[in-house]
Length: 206
Image 1 (tube, rainbow, N blue to C red):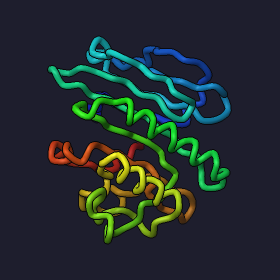
Image 2: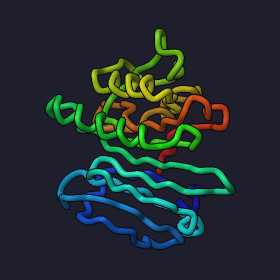
Image 3: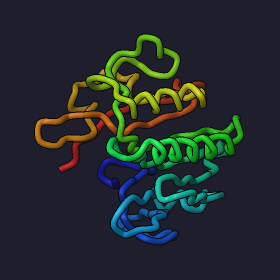
Image 4: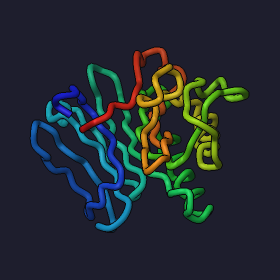
């Protein structure tokens, strides 16, 4: 994070049990929540200099948590999410989206929101019919879980940030396994704040 000059990072599948904040070295602190050391878990990593700006931490579930910060007079809500995988029951998926809806509805409309999440879904390439919430630059075809992301963006008047920037596939793909190359991790923000974002791409580490 230090080398990449990352100040805030949303993390998923932390698999740490507990509800704590801990220093992780190199000037960063991790706020996390998990109920099982073998599955799920979410967190937000902050550069130490921003820790004093944290006004509120909401550890909602082992799939959703949020931090509210005040930075130079601007209220910023950072939400980390981890959606159920494709093979999970529909009820579990709907429960996740219901929780995320509640988190969004609790945030005043005048405050900034950035969601960094592993949504385990593909919103797909192209945006016909969905121009108000996404750009054209997804990856491959949309699936049910990706449709849930798009539906959420429409409900909450948000934009799927990844899809607005034309990049080579290597800078759009967030998951690789064998021959599979997909996009499952997304950043969302309020549509009214999209103009404040100058770039979004996948950075290959290692």
